[in-house]
Length: 277
Figure 1 (cartoon, rainbow, N blue to C red):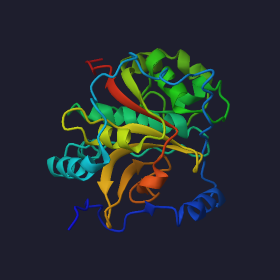
Figure 2 (cartoon, rainbow, N blue to C red; figure 1 turned 120 degrees about the vertical axis):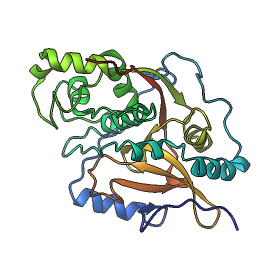
Figure 3 (cartoon, rainbow, N blue to C red; figure 1 turned 180 degrees about the vertical axis):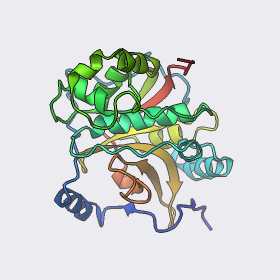
């Protein structure tokens, strides 16, 4: 019998048969989306890679290797999702703001911090998107968020709580200091629409990392934390959303392979080491 990942009780699985209905339902509920198509003339492919080299992921897996790689990662409990749960990374909530492109990206950053084995900082994505968009409630793409996280960093919720408006908060010494302590120092842009690259990043035995996924069919960006083997021999991706813990299964869901094809997918390699303040 083919290996199947343990997905817990009553997981939300999104596939071709229900995706359209779910998107309509979520729009009717007033959920905020916010991912816009990336302008590759302004932000060419690879511009989110810092430095612009393949740092640690190695060769992309062949499809015939998926099942074994997923089983090995599940049994070793080395996936980004295992670290996310062990270090109790909070589920973000973008509220009515179209800032999924920043919220999903900062979730990936927080999970990367968790994978160091230390308590992950409770980072706030809102100030990053708010600054990038000049206070406007406007969509974007992950590369914009990664640039902001590398250039000016991400403050924690304790110095900028929730989705609190006010650009002057960026002048606060506490906000500046917190943001400077939390930056992305290395990231890797994975090939577009390449499911194998996504599985490789999430199952690597030594260098597994979370990946942001920009999904055209959803108009939304989420954070991928685990590759899974589904009943019937198929594969999927466990995602962390930014619609609060009440969405899906504790803020998470599973996308089958056909719904995991991301036009933009960026893996975080390293963040600024956390030092004593």
